[in-house]
Length: 191
Image 1 (tube, rainbow, N blue to C red):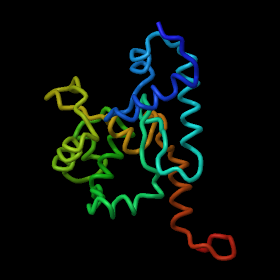
Image 2 (image 1 turned 120 degrees about the vertical axis):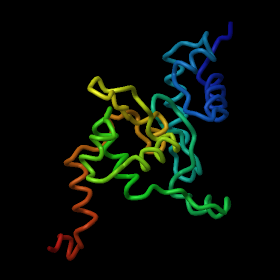
Image 3 (image 1 turned 90 degrees about the horizontal axis):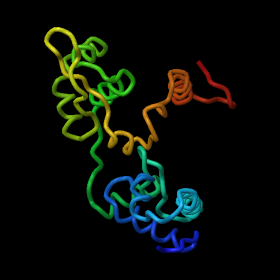
């Protein structure tokens, strides 16, 4: 049995998170270092978060879904894309609309999505499924038993959300849109 201290467990946790292709949950860390107290694990993660939040670091430790992962800082995105010589795959407007409906209304059927959007969404849903942003969450108990769609843990990772509850509310969205759309003149919005 190892006697753990903050200084001895911190690099172990850092290595586990760094080596993992997916976010690492506390339960996975507890299995890996089973003889370490839970409170010490939490202190180590907090300490790593503080270390990687310092200005001038190219990477950061973030909460993603129910776990933790390392990622590059968003401010370095253009250099990363240049070095990789690849373009970022973006979602179309239809993809974003469909994904938004699923995120806020989940679980939701294709017919419900199409009723909200007003257009056929089957191709867009297939695309979101292929990108692992949405998943089939079962079948609705109505005639025809249509498929239900919900977001995935990958969706939470991509949009840097701890849980679906972290989605912005209607008021936050409206405030953000007003700030983005209203031109500023002398510190005040001009209509």
